Image (cartoon, rainbow, N blue to C red; front, side):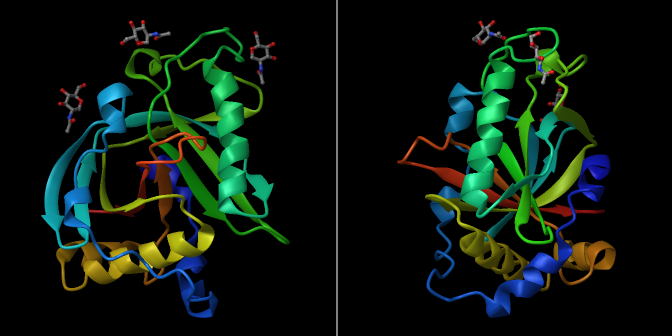
Length: 220
Ligand SMILES: *[C@@H]1O[C@H](CO)[C@@H](O)[C@H](O)[C@H]1NC(C)=O
Ligand SMILES: *[C@@H]1O[C@H](CO)[C@@H](O)[C@H](O)[C@H]1NC(C)=O
Ligand SMILES: CC(=O)N[C@H]1CO[C@H](CO)[C@@H](O)[C@@H]1O
């Protein structure tokens, strides 16, 4: 994951939590959510090993994986940025690519947030199915990211993730890691405001039983 994640840095973001409104508190941790999202029964998902399941967090070891990513999309909100990126990636898997290759939908779709001059930028990524990973179909406006095997700290949340909620849940994730070796490793390599990603397991038009995850990579 290292190659991809060096460009995924949104480090200052967690620092912003003190200035955002408190209208949407992080959801209380629901231990029953700490399982492989049901979407992965129907769609191919990247494989991982559950390393540790703690109160409010999971540590996973993801296998190496290949992703197709949009360029950073300027948008007024993460919901909007993710929707725009998802629409492009959906055309991509329907064959809008240089080899006209069709692929099945996979999960999750991952959004990375980076600050821009006026608005935030959202890079949206699609997990390439295993059978296409050797030679992913290319497209002019998309780029391939190859992630090495990596440890990731994870917190699951339901519903739609707003920018505001994502920040709060990322902070809650870091709080839940207090005193663990994982937090030590995250802070050793990334400082107090690590990068994080938002993973959506459901398409934007699915309104119920939604599963999302906040991911913070851990360098071991
Ligand atoms: C990683 O991938 C290999 C090969 O596809 C597979 O055998 C192994 O079970 C995977 N590991 C995990 C943790 O999913
Ligand atoms: C999509 O998945 C189905 C069921 O696993 C498989 O039979 C089919 O070949 C896949 N289609 C593509 C385009 O990969
Ligand atoms: C963006 C991009 O490269 N799109 C291409 C995907 O494949 C179709 C079909 O070959 C091309 O027409 C597009 O230009």
